[in-house]
Image (cartoon, rainbow, N blue to C red; front, top):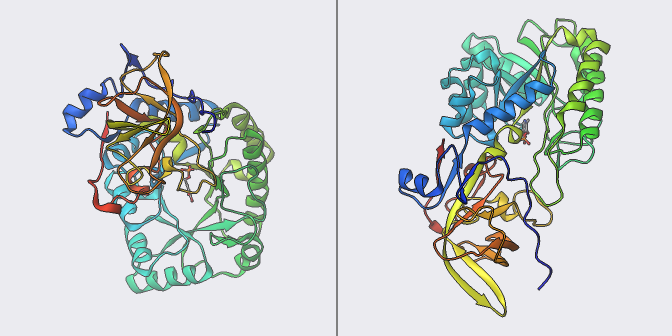
Length: 411
Ligand SMILES: Cc1ncc(COP(=O)(O)O)c(C=O)c1O
């Protein structure tokens, strides 16, 4: 058996009372009673608000904050965030309807995605949201549909930049990509488009996600401003908006630290004075997990405990079918543990043992925590996975093996 992995310590965002973890002021037992369920996701709206405040404290106020709903589309959360952010980015018709019905002005909703279907394009044009157009054919389709229904489509071009985000969990720009139109091709076609056939809004320059390196984000911002200026220079009509990407990460694994937004904000301030042509436009940063991931936990009950050749296994009523990303199967190359703790024994150091917590699925992939030091875990205790507010239920194969779906609550 290899060495146990220590508990990772980015769990200080939640209050603890008499060793009980509190989410929005409630213990896990309280939440169980409220939901009548012993496995759930719970999100603390104050922590979401704190993350948004952190953003605004560090990032120049000229730059607007949009929430990428894909990170967590739980309707009560989206509705709460409607008053805290300046726009929503959506990636499907369902997300678009959620965004529109939250009351967010349609002018502040954008629709991105590399394979938009005709019905989605029509829905977006009819609703009046901005289409982040990702191919030349998609532009033509938007124009044709706009003519059929008599509404001018609002279009921003998603750009696949020539540069790529360094040191990132997920790169979505640079080299050949399915996202957006290559910058060199866009520079070629922009001067000759028929700007009477659509309402031109601007550019969406998105290069990646889950980045914890301030220097890499600063480098991407420098390159984004330079690219945006070159694009604006060749468009014969006025550019109104540039979405300068997102990518702010959160610490999931041992050794990772929270991103320091201060140098990123200082650099953006400098860029605003170096590029006056951009400073006078609407500039947007689009974030998902940075705003919501740390605000969420996934809690399940330990229902059995057994030894296998000297190692302790905890069985729980939660698993991969609810939380694929924690199982390591949502884009990770090597599985690492998210921060995990016993939610009713917080702050107790004694009797910590190295254990592996698993779910009910008959696959070794269904691992919630592998060889982690947990405090005196017993049947009936709460197993809590932190950093679970993004890419949870909707990014998990909930029907796999037919176990019950998970419930959520915003507190
Ligand atoms: C276009 C776009 N915007 C926003 C996001 C959200 O990323 P994150 O949750 O890491 O902020 C993604 C992630 O896939 C994306 O593709």
